[in-house]
Amino acid sequence: MATDLTAAQFHHCDLYRAEFEKAIANKVDFRSSYNYTIDPSKTKLKKAQFALEGLKGLLYKHDIIVE
Image (cartoon, rainbow, N blue to C red; front, side, top):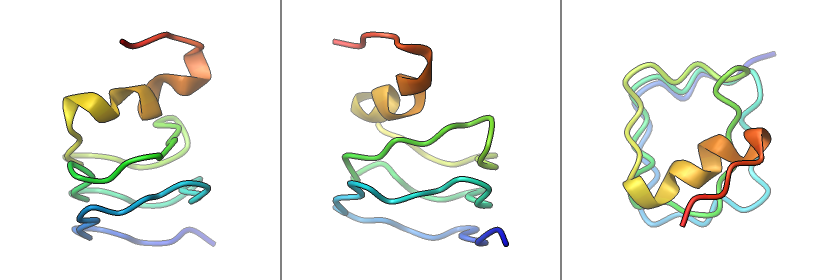
């Protein structure tokens, strides 16, 4: 079963080991959160908000290095 997190706000949250697979995370605010890894191909993220520093958490599966 998918979790619906639509419009949730994760303010200053350490999301280490949080699993978002098959979640509905549309309009979620991740801008001040950290330590997340989210696979955009398995999680609905339409209009979700991320800080530039958090992009590596979205690109991890592609083995891309972001510095």
